[in-house]
Length: 408
Ligand SMILES: Cc1cc2nc3c(=O)[nH]c(=O)nc-3n(C[C@H](O)[C@H](O)[C@H](O)COP(=O)(O)OP(=O)(O)OC[C@H]3O[C@@H](n4cnc5c(N)ncnc54)[C@H](O)[C@@H]3O)c2cc1C
Image (cartoon, rainbow, N blue to C red; front, side):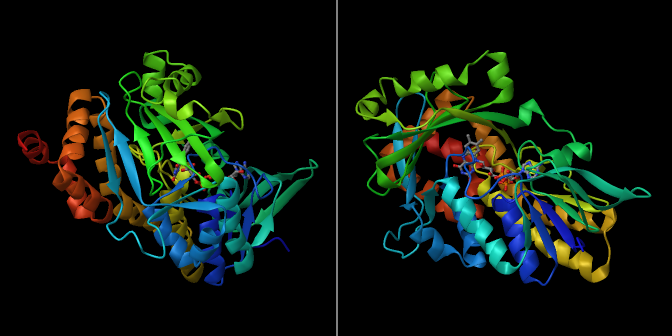
């Protein structure tokens, strides 16, 4: 009875995207999650351009617009010495669909999850994956525990791990969990009453002298709320013995930001979660299994965005689940095609972002880029085009770009 073509563990944006596309392709899909939806996920809640393209293919753009979400048209950066530049994601500010949105994960994840339900995936909620079922070393399904403690079993020749940063699926497969040089710690707190946002609802990334190479974010949200947080590479946290909570308090009362928080009030506790970075993705495929999203360590190492990469890898996982079902090939050699495909889509961008993450160690250069861009609209324009045009973004790793910038 509990036989499926594939079992997806984790119904976050990555797992729900995979389940939707796989079910739409005609596969018998089981999607399990330890929680009920809607549920919170600690995040900056920024839905980037990359997520938007998958959202479009899922057919849920309108649902996102009608949800409690805020359209965002650009990003504001500030540098270690206080220079600030606002860069639009696009020049067309009257498009019906914004290039990005900010939406509480409580609402956003429920929307993606609904797509999977509507597509016909079988859903088991409040069901925690506990291990694999195997026959003669071949994966044949999963064991899981329901909220009341009852054990459940389901059978499939393919298991997809989409269970996030602390992936139990990856752990059970013996895949290295935490590489501190490619892992970030992050804290998030919701506020109301923060002032001084850009009229086009820019997300804000601040590289403050006292906090770099970490960064402080302030994202506007619907109903006058804001998502505020701080993130830093785990190696730096350890090396400098940083207490992220103290750093967050210091940033909120920092002379550059305190006026904006004068009448603001935290409307929830400060919460933390890990960010496995795509500067070193995990092995993503093996005999009878695939990993995607945070479980595969695919978060952008510069911006901390991972929703888009989770959805992109989710879409690819569905394509490969269909290929595997059609050919009845579940071996590592065949499924490694999935990893090759995901890396071919993401590697250039992840490398570039890793390079930009390291740029934040060179305060003067980081500040110079931001300062020059704030004074010269042509530079701001070039950076703006980089959000849309990947070839343009490649300039950022060219020493000539910085030489020209310094001479400008
Ligand atoms: C502080 C912080 C700020 C961030 N800000 C942003 C941002 O602004 N924009 C952005 O794009 N990204 C951001 N990210 C990254 C983003 O949150 C993740 O990349 C994204 O959630 C990955 O999606 P996913 O589907 O892979 O995993 P998740 O969203 O983590 O979903 C995993 C799912 O698996 C379930 N699960 C876990 N274990 C089990 C189990 N054993 N059995 C069954 N189910 C299980 C969980 O309940 C969950 O529903 C941020 C992350 C952090 C920590």
